[in-house]
Length: 98
Image (cartoon, rainbow, N blue to C red; front, side, top):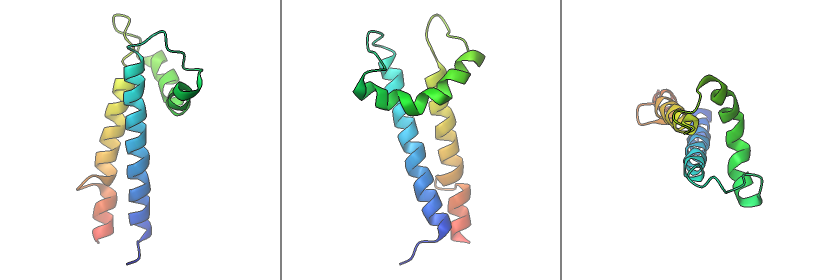
């Protein structure tokens, strides 16, 4: 069985969106431990792909009560994009059925 380009794109996007959601959830958990340095190796792997999204959004959405909510917002954004594009009735899935 050969995969169409749309099926390959939806598979890749699903993996990328799922990985980004997981990394943002790790960032949320790491905010509970402020003594953890994001510059040390295991935590740097979480910080590198997420910080380009979080840094500009922190300028738009300031911390509420000292709590940074931007990782929560990005989990929502990536979850919505994943559902719209590669969910059960996502755009790429519907294109693949045509």
